[in-house]
Length: 214
Image (cartoon, rainbow, N blue to C red; front, side, top):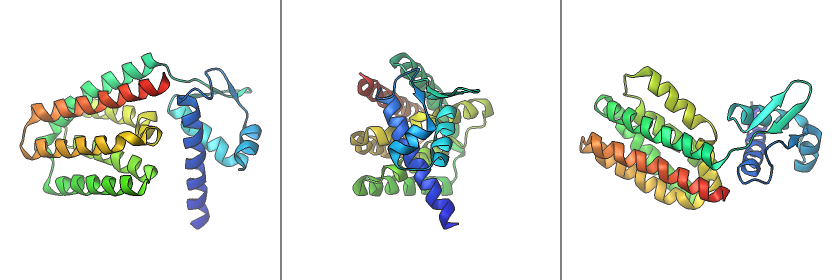
């Protein structure tokens, strides 16, 4: 079990480094990713490299071609604008449809996650922040009865957007204050405000990521 956990931690670190290099443009679209070279450069075996490339393929940042290996797909500012615009609109609707069906236990868990993210920020633990942030957003939507839109929202957050806080950690404090405002709107049973807060929250993140690319 310990060996498995150590491998997963190593793989996550490799994935994070490669993702950051792709998003910031250090690895450019069309560039080939040779496992042996990456393993030597990072001082790891080929296995975590291979698994990292598979993760990045699922995120749409890498393409693995038969008999040719992996190459960078990359993202453009247009890709980011489209994804975050669609996500902001859909997630705003989803949380509005969800709010009246969240339980007291859900509300308590949301509060716990906000407090955990405050601690993550204080400790500089971006990996934990990423996971808690993802759970917060998915839980806030969990009461929605519309299945198709929830599937789409889950797809949009599970790619590289889930890991953006680790790329721009300076924004995490603002992000968690926005989470707290969402909980206040939830307690006040104000679906319009909640939707507006979620939409602004997502678009602000997308705009920040676009500036990072520039």
